[in-house]
Length: 149
Length: 83
Image 1: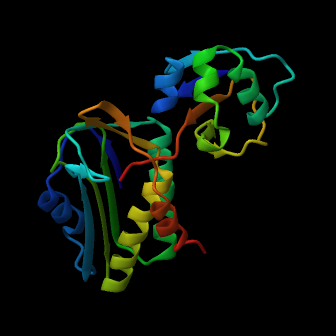
Image 2: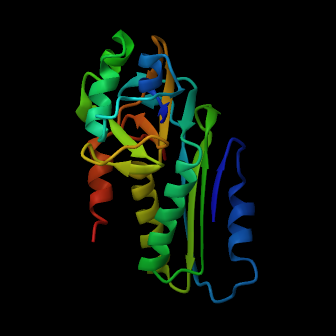
């Protein structure tokens, strides 16, 4: 399932809903991305997350479909927020559920790595010098490349 | 053809969305970028480093050699930074 939303989410509620009623699930993995107050040694205030409505949902759907093809999963969920976010706020949730831990853990890792390099989101950080568009990091590309087939 | 600009492409061009009619010789993403670049200082600045750009045609990532046609939705943006 894919959700792109401005509103915050409750981790417990989302995870419970994901596994509810399915007792074949033996492992549930999740990753939550948070807004940091530091970037490259610089103090950062709030940020605004921009995205490309339409393509975002399309890309997230495709990334999820890829995970479902590669691993045996009973359930998966990607929630990505956009708009104004403060340090400490939740940005993204990726959760995967499977009969066994390995598929859940690996696919969760895969989803967040791929999402970071493929889903059309851009961070605009508030800095003391004004708004600054965050540069993409090579390490994110390298992390995603590990999952190439 | 509908053009969309995101992140600093939007800041530099001063445009988030526009409809354009490039000349009929413009048949690829690369040719579209060359044509766009000469439309004003904002465009020239935004498109100065072509390698820093990512392009989507009809919401699919595209290469510079991929075709573009009237009626397409073409988006220009920097490498993504979500997650």
